[in-house]
Length: 555
Ligand SMILES: Cc1cc2nc3c(=O)[nH]c(=O)nc-3n(C[C@H](O)[C@H](O)[C@H](O)COP(=O)(O)OP(=O)(O)OC[C@H]3O[C@@H](n4cnc5c(N)ncnc54)[C@H](O)[C@@H]3O)c2cc1C
Image (tube, rainbow, N blue to C red; front, side, top):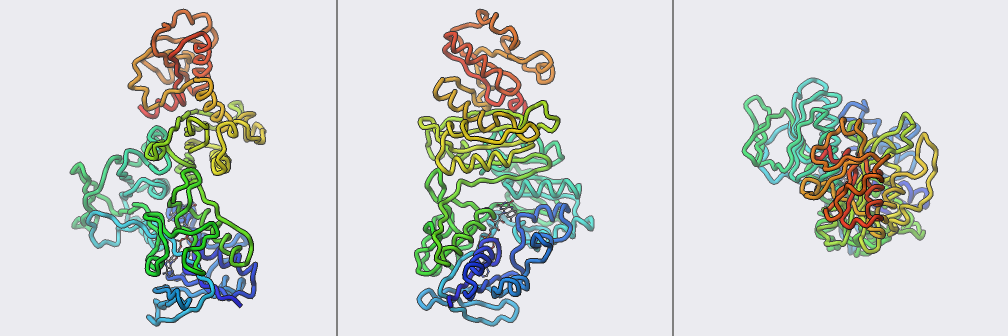
């Protein structure tokens, strides 16, 4: 009988244990977890804090309503669970883990044939002074979610400052304002929210949406210190010497892999991304495996190590280790960082590289932008979304996609993720088969359109202008929107207004030797006119990526 010890009792650890026990019922499996609970849905915590989910225990329920606690794992799965126990040392030569029972302060030792490190991650600590206060916390630990909710429920919190505008900061900003009506300040170091996922032009749409929902956003802003006021509220000093007062501060500064134990025994690590493993998730030390937030994931686009701390990946990695330990052929090939987040009624989704990252890697890339309906516009439920596709210029290989809007967004990012992970190109994006039914989809969907736009740009030279370059554009602007649309979103600097119905008759009015930019509401008409002009011998023509709908949210 093999002895398996798993350190960490959340997504990666519990998945490994549960599947391995199903495959090898005679294995003796023990999970060591330093908290006094296991296996709850961390990803649901923002919705618990917001009040959408009443009871914290709902985050730990099976689909049939049973609490997935230690008792459940011990009785139904015959897995040994040691709660409130911390693994403090690994003796790799003798294959033992030394543990400390945090309740009794007693040490004990567990032997293993195979050891799985599923130690997860911890929040990055602030690099500015913070006082001791019960009103400053991260949002990683469920105790903090519970504490905040109790305080919010009892009316103790009138204002919150969230430091860090990544996924969790943005989700929390909705949680604090939407149900509790708390004045919310969201402070972000870079020039945009969700900088890992979005480039500035799409992030601006998110910023506008949050501002509309009464969240105060501070970009390009760092915190220099937090101090306590006399009434116990907190004073947050910013780099521009201004201050914000808040009753509660959330530190959402990112996470780092938990590698204290693995560092001690010479396991190989990637510099910032955690434990290095092979495709079977084996470390370089015999009989030790690792999964979840504590490991470096191979990025399938760049082939470099990446930190992808996602529950989806942790579960898949857990399954792979279980398979491998049960003697099955199974591998984890890598990921491209596919994610989505809902903020109020907006969905933001991304996969692969954003332009900032493509630039940093010195890739030869290009982009296209589109504003689309997610299903035929005649359907009453149709929703608008904005997309940005990044691809390699020479090969048209897919590098990254960002989506923001309402409707069927997650479906698109998932499809893109499969294609980009498999090194597919814009041709594959244009060609892939999808189900068309008006309540859910158009005959061509946004991904098909983006594929076509990339091909048009690289092969036929029908180029789009980067929306962020619009203000610097010095040439001749042709607005091909109808008057009603111009009234809705006026554009003062158009040199010529043309209707799509009669522009063919007016082509001679357009100067041939100028740089020309064609603009419409969402993109398709300006693309069509740009192509016509190029066919007629105009040399220097572009259309505005994403149309004026995207532009109006940027400037
Ligand atoms: C607020 C929030 C929202 C999120 N939302 C999403 C989402 O929507 N989608 C998504 O894909 N991901 C989301 N994530 C990320 C996701 O929760 C993590 O990727 C996932 O939990 C990682 O699982 P894990 O098992 O690797 O690590 P963890 O969940 O961090 O678990 C590791 C466990 O190991 C224990 N441990 C560590 N060291 C020791 C030791 N020495 N001895 C004993 N025990 C130890 C820790 O106590 C911890 O319980 C979210 C995360 C947070 C915080």
